[in-house]
Amino acid sequence: MTVTAETATMTLPSKKRRRIGRLPAFAYLTVTPTLVLMALIVGLPLLYSLYLSFNSTNPITKRWIFVGFANYTKMFETMDFWYALARTAYFSALAVVGTTVLGTLFALVLNQTFAGRGALRSIVLVPWAMAPVSIGVLWSFVYAGNFGLLNGFLHDIGLGRLATAWFGDGFRALNLVALTQIWNQAPLTTLMMLSALQSMPASLNRAALLDGAGPVKRFFSITLPWLKPTLLFSTIIATINALMTFDIIWIMTRGGPGAATTTLSWLGYMQSFQFLKFGEGAAILYVLTILSLACAILYFFVLSPRRATSASAPAEVEVGVAARKARPTMVAIPPWTVRPLLHPATARTVRSVLFRLAVAAIAIWSFLPVAALVFISLSPATDLIRTPPSIIPSTLTFENYRMVLMAEGTAGVQAQRVPVSLFNSFVIGVIVSVINVALGTFAGYGFARYGRHRFFSVSLWVLLLTRMVPALTLVLPFFVIFRSLGLIDTYLGVIIAYSTILMPLAAWMMKSSFETVPLSLERAAEIDGCSRWTMFRKVLVPVVRPGIIAALIFCFLVSWNEFLFAMILTSTPRTQTIPVIIAGFLNQARFYEYGPLFAASVLAIIPPVAVAFFFQRYLVQGALSGAVKG
Image 1 (cartoon, one colour):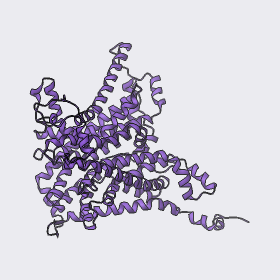
Image 2: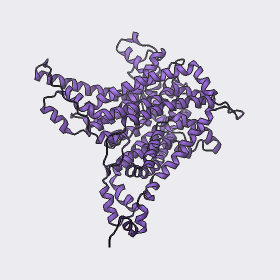
Image 3: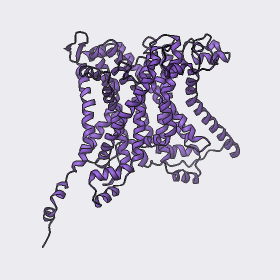
Image 4: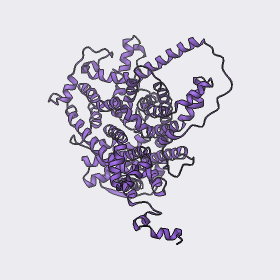
C-alpha cells in the first residue's frame, strides 16, 4: 500500500497530531504568569499615569478635572522644563562618557594576570554594590563646605587656602554629582567588559602576536571589535541609568544649589510629591519615560543580531549572549610598523611600572572612599564638625555603632530605627528575590526555547522594554492606587513595586542560562519517558543552578539598595528599609546624629560588599548573561 504524507499524518496518535504546527501548552504556561503579572503591575500603572497626565488633580478636595494636553503644553512653555532637560542631557553625557571610558580601562587592567587580581576585582565591584543612598551620604560629607573630608585633607597638608564650599557653585555641583554617578556606575561597565574579555578566544591574540602585532594594534584590530556589542550595550545602559538618576541627587543636593542640579527626574518628583501636582508631574515623568524608551529602542535596533541562525538555535535579542557567541569582524592589521622609541628591555620596564601604577590607581579609586566612610563612622561626633576640619581623628570609638545597634534611649529616634530597618530590608529582599527568580526561571525557559515564535519574541521585547521605564513613572500611580487599596506601608505593596524592576531582570538572566543547555538533554529526558514538568524540574533546573544563584544575587542587591519605592510607599518604621532610614537622618539637623548616620551607612553596605567579595564569579556570570542592575 502506498502511504502518502496525508495518510501518514492521519495514522499518528491524536496526542502527536495536536503538536504538529503549534507549540505545546507547557510553553505558554512558562511565560504566562510573568506576562500577566507585568501587565498588572507595569502596564496598568503606566496607563493610569498617562490618564493622570491628562488631568488636573487636587489631593485635598480629591477633584479631578480633565484638561487634555494642557499639562504637556504648559510644561513645554516653561523654561524650568527646558533647563532641566538641558541639565539632564549634560549630566547623562558626562556620566556615560566617564562610566564607559573608566569601566573599559579597568576591565583591560583586571583581565591581566597579576598578584591579588581576585581581591582587586572584588574591590572594584564595591562602589556598584553599595546603595546609592549610602554613596550620596559618603560623597556629601567629602564635599561638605565647612567640615568635609576634602577640605580637611587640604588643611592637613597645608593647602587650606584651597578649601571651598564645593557645592556653592551650581555648575561645579552638577559636575560633582556626575562624578559620583561615574564612581557608582563604572564598575558595572567593568563587570560587563571583563566578562566579554574572558569569553574572547586566546587564539585570536596568539595569531596576532605571531604576525608581530603590538599591544595597540591588537587592541584596535582584535579586542575592540570583539568588545563592540558589549560596549554599545553598556553605553545604552549607562545612558538609561543616568537619565533615571534620583537617589544620589536626593541625598547630595536636593536639586540645588538653586536649581543647578534639577534634572527631569528631580523636577518630576517635586511636581508630584512636593507640590502635589500629580497631573503636571505625570506629564514630566512621561517625557522622561519616552527618552528612556528611545534609548531602549536604540539598543534593540543597534544591538540585535542580524546574522542568520540555524534552525535549532534560539533567537537572541540581548547583547549579553551576542557578545559571548558572536565573532568580531576582524580588522586587517596595518602592514606598517612604528620604529620603537625605547629599547625593548626599557619598554618592558616602563610598561610594568605603568601597569602597577594603574593597578594602584584602581585600588585607590575604588577602596579609599569606602575606607573613609568606615573611618569617619568610628570618629566621635565632635570630630565631624570641628573647624578647621581635619581628617585625623582625636580618637576612635564604637559609640556610633552602639547607638544604632543597641537602640538605647540616649540614641536619637532615627538611630533606634536602624535594626528594624535592616531586618525589613533583609526579609523583603529574600522574599521578592525568591518570587521573581522562581517566575523568571519558568519564563526564561520559555523565551529561550521558543523565542523564534512571534508571540515569545514580541513578549520578550515588551518585557525588556519595561525594564527601561523609570521607577518615578510607576511610583506615582502606585502611590495613588495603593493608598486607595490600603497597601501603603505594607510588605506586599513594597514587594509588588520591587517586582517591576526584578521580574524582567530575572527572566532575562534565566533565558541566557537556559540557552547554554543543549536541546539534546531535553530530548534524552523525553525518550526516557519524562513529562515536560518532570524534565524541567529534575533535569534542567539542576543544570542551570549557577544561573539561578546569579539571578538571586542580582535581585537581592537591587532590592536591598532600592530607595525610591520604599521612600514613597512606606511611612512607618514597621516597613521602612535601611536606605529610607539613612535618608531620614538628613532631615534631622543635629550634629550628634552624624556619627550614627555614618555607622548606619556602613551597616547598610556590609551585605552588598560581602556579596561582591564572596560571589564575584556569579556576578561575572550574570554580566556575561547580559544582566544589569540599575
